[in-house]
View 1 (cartoon, rainbow, N blue to C red):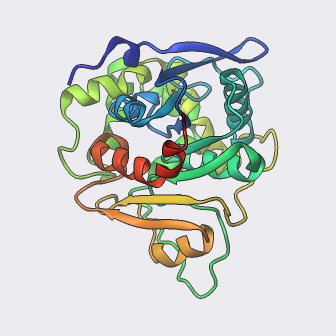
View 2: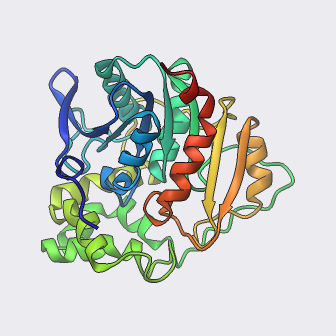
Length: 304
């Protein structure tokens, strides 16, 4: 499906002392809604949400995280939750937003969880579009199955990032590697993404430096990259939270409902989206848009 030019070519906003994020925005003046992408995505994953949510009454902003898409690389070398959220708070300040609804997917969901703890007064409510949650002790629940055959990329990207980028020596190889996460790695049902979809979504990763920057979060996970500040994902989230999870993503944790009840004591959900995988904003945009609109109906109705 062809996308409007303004959804393909983002704005560039100075969020802190000459450090710029690339931002896609629609609906200025509505209820502030920040959409935070994860890996292996960029803000392009929200392309089918921006216009419908703006038409529903939101001021919708989808940035590329530092190092991703068209945003600047990290000026300080940090790619951890605090660094990402320093940028996002700077973006909200630039937009004049005191508070925002924050929707996150994958890494973006964990960034949103950290944001709600680190800057609780800046987050109105949360929308989590997978099974991400605070990293708590869950007494009485079995440990999460790590599925090593699926998650081998975590070690590769976290422990040998430079070597992996060197092996992916051409733009085509780099884009094919990223496309695997939408395909045979089973994060979503087969054929959920057309070749045209993959051409659009993987385009930023043809650049070796962009691919390398996207591995930095995995270096944080594996302990090979320093943090700018401790991550704040070790406690329940008290904000109102909507959780949607695709039934067909292999990344789903066991005992999800029980874990969610402890991690998000004020949650609505988790609601299962049948026939969908990990990439709900793209795979099921109509359901995602309707759910966010319903969850925030009071905010929308109170807006002038």
